[in-house]
Length: 204
Image (cartoon, rainbow, N blue to C red):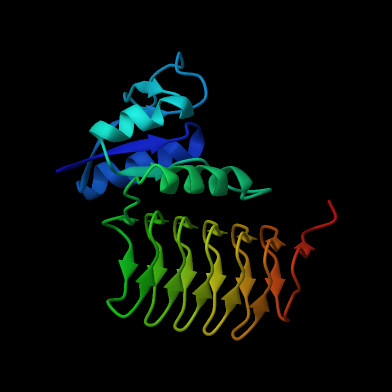
């Protein structure tokens, strides 16, 4: 079983740990986060901070970014670029309880979580989160550094630009095109194209 480092603690890290343990594809060495003195996360030790990554990656080449993404993708982008500079291997992590069509494509460093579905000819970019029970229908194209959150429905032929966030339970109508850094709040229904930087959410 291949060893892997988790980069970033917190709630999303815990969910990633559960996916990795269930799939039994990787052995988690430990967690890397800003404060190396932190308590273990679900039994896995915090073994260093970002500054320790060059040394840690010399022993364990594979890493997964386990920082969450809601308001901004910038932390995940920074860590992705850092890991690429350090020549880390950024594997795709897929839950054993997810379904990914053999005709789909998933970029490096992305995670597909429990109950998620990736249908035929869908493309999920690099360093993305496809969260629990989210759906990518046929011919969907999700660019890099996006988070498609829990229970969201991205219908056929939708295109979503780099760094965007789709909140829990949101529905994107078929064929809609979303620009880069778009934020769709929880439960929203999107029926038309949206330009870069658009924020759609409830007033309250």
